[in-house]
Image (cartoon, rainbow, N blue to C red):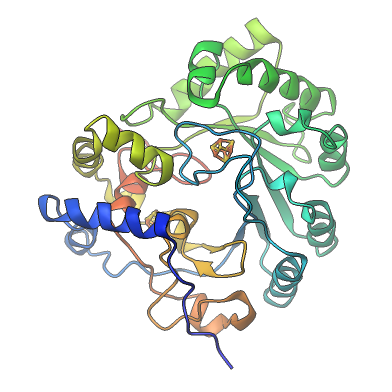
Length: 348
Ligand code: SF4
Ligand code: SF4
């Protein structure tokens, strides 16, 4: 029997949904922009990436975290959900699995799942916050990832201590650099396609990221000259008005101005390649979403697609209609924003 019942929306998700609904009347609906661009309704083109958000436990509490993750969170994916994910990867031949959190490596089933997914031939991406490599029990993490040829996408707000520590906490920059040196020593970030190391950054305030190509050049130079570390690519992502960043915007009276800024920078080319079109996102309980952002707002897949991984239906999930909202402007502003960075050049 299919599970059509959606999970109960948490207090946190409900408050966020209500906050965004409350400001909607002053802003154009996202779907109106899609309509004008001939892109309504937004539809998935297939599933090339299964993204697992394995929980909200994290060793950090970053100011702009859209997941509101931290050491006190207890949500964590159980072994049986990982098994379901492996079944779907196997039967659907989905080529890429993208593991995120929280700090995904702190989930006790993380390594077993990575091993299983690699045995299936999947490309595995670990979204790593870098400092987790220095947590108790994680000293061999870099070796583990290297052994399984796991791709690393590591978050770092800036190539400088002041900006990084301001967003992520004291001494985070120094610990992140230590981790990057470890990754480099293992062969990551040196251009070898088996061990890619990408950095992902989002702005430290209520503004859009700068040009990705230009920033990458600057970061590479600065990190090499001042810290002796290398990486392959820089991905820029816009901050999404969700989670801790939503509260931060509200506290500064910046929520509506920020959304107007995103809306004014609407880019239809970015909209045509937003990540929800080829990704399916799974939460720690196995419920399904069009993306990690919808997940944080408690907006499950809809329009007839079953809401739980155990009921995966290729005919209903691969071409599903996507659930959209005001927050989607974050993906379509300027150069666009996705898990793999900008989608288009901002000035194009
Ligand atoms: S942004 Fe990443 S590292 Fe920071 S608290 Fe959130 S999940 Fe953890
Ligand atoms: S927020 Fe999610 S659903 Fe909306 S455009 Fe971005 S990826 Fe797609």
